[in-house]
Image (cartoon, rainbow, N blue to C red; front, side, top):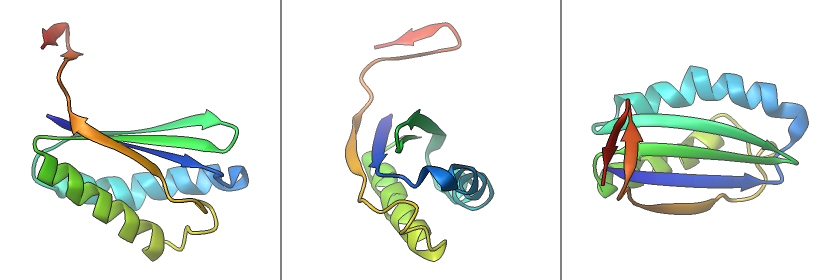
Length: 104
């Protein structure tokens, strides 16, 4: 499994509700249709920081999610709400635990 973490700084906090709504309505459906999709999480950390986490089976699939995310920001005209490019960390998930099962 591969994860992509995107940290957005300088988020327009007055638009958090709008961002959240659009993520649920238009971004998550795109991600969920991608092959290998295993999950998406959006974290509101306060102080104009939001972080998203995508989980996919392969690195190629995870890379595709980054392309889709960038396209989505442009299409939804969210450049002002998300004025800075995200700091992206991606890689293989080497340990995880779900439903009480530890995988290492």
